[in-house]
Image 1: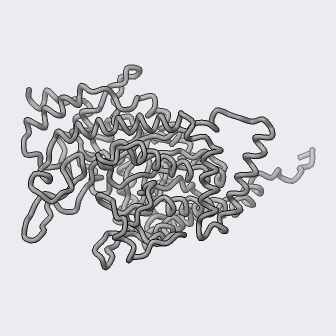
Image 2: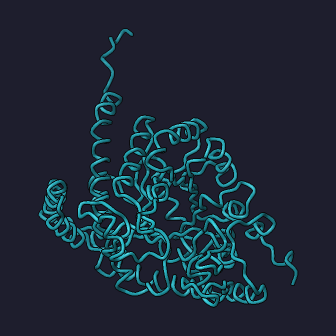
Image 3: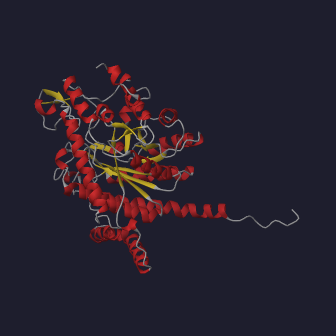
Length: 470
């Protein structure tokens, strides 16, 4: 069968340059793996993607907040009930704090059940004079520095599917089977505050949440939302053969959806306007995210909107900014101002991780908690100054007590990095650092609301009485 016979509306990307794709050594094995994937059941359903798009539309209108978080790069050996449970628990704890502080719904999106590939700055890696393909994530090759492990293997795409299916089943079990009960999540947060070296800072907020739950219980309020939660799945749509193989036409509408995840995003390295990734994203009906780094111009952002969200549909497009703590206050204002002036309504989310990576003396890639927090603070400051909505945060995190990022309330130092540095690619916030961040973002949101309240009150105040004769 020729390539032209394979092309559908969602396959138009095949005629565009595709960055960051593996050099698969055997195209016949790749085609066989893709054909198998094309016959597999959906991992998510179109109606679920539509529900997330509705949730993100509320974010774009300023009526909700996004918490998006999970591993830099998932690995096949981490698909265990314990590891998935701890990620879910961390997201639930962070969301509970943010929900109370913001008084708006928090849309929980995991970097999970599909984040098995990563873009890389170089195609090869050299050690002791030996050059091999770079590790591109478990969906492509292995981490071990051997010719066998580093050779891209398309059978890994099928392993990615099965690992994602297992993870999604675990998430659904944890979020609907009682584990996500709000009172239990709050008890976990109380334990965190009691055991944190900076717990006194968060004690008042924790006590306020406790009082609110006690009040609701006394009133007999017991809504179903207290006992379950909703976590959507997302990943970078990097490996286009995989994403295209999992694209299906919705039986209700006939529209194509990428059923590998509820939301997919395009990375900073693959957002070329004439590239395959933007073309693919423009063809599917999922909510789409695009990472915007410090080189992004307002014209770039507007052109991406024209390509991916030409109808200016709230919830369709999310911009995930990753500027770096030192650049966000200088670069973001023009982007937000010009996009807003054009009448577009993307949701704006801050990724404070990727622009703040540096190499420690030990050779480990790491990030400073203070830099992460400063970028989030700058993100809030910009939106506050412009009167726009800081829509959420996008964090690389784990539920484990790793030592990959430095700082935090229970600080990790540069000399601690080698103790539990377990990431397959980039450094993640550990559980305590993630909760530290949630409490501090909650404080930022409360500060913002306190400063906006007088203006809202003035805007909503009735005008002075006008004489009847007027």
